[in-house]
Length: 110
Image 1 (spheres, rainbow, N blue to C red):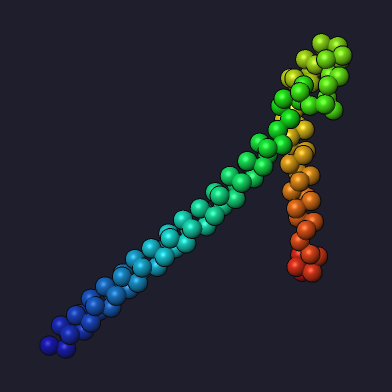
Image 2: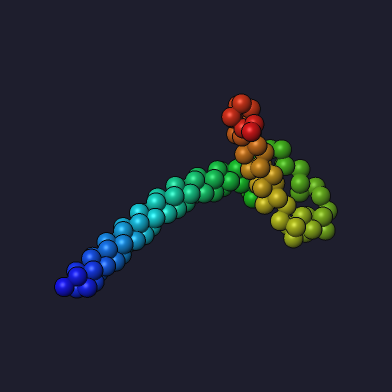
């Protein structure tokens, strides 16, 4: 009789532990999805900012209006080096740096 009661209590405890693991896995999954959603939105915003500062159409910008005076060989090299994308990455990095400068130093020093 005592042996069967012990087996029954062991079974109940094992089931409760399994339910606890199932609930914990569910919470971890939900928290992971929430963080993934936030990270995805953040990266989408950053991507849209980079596209907003796109220099691919640099011929139409006033600052680069004299590029057609360059020899075709130099224009070819700049095209092959993806110079417009390089300018986009530099501009995005500069914008991110300026945005990070807005954070007070008291919060960033450890």
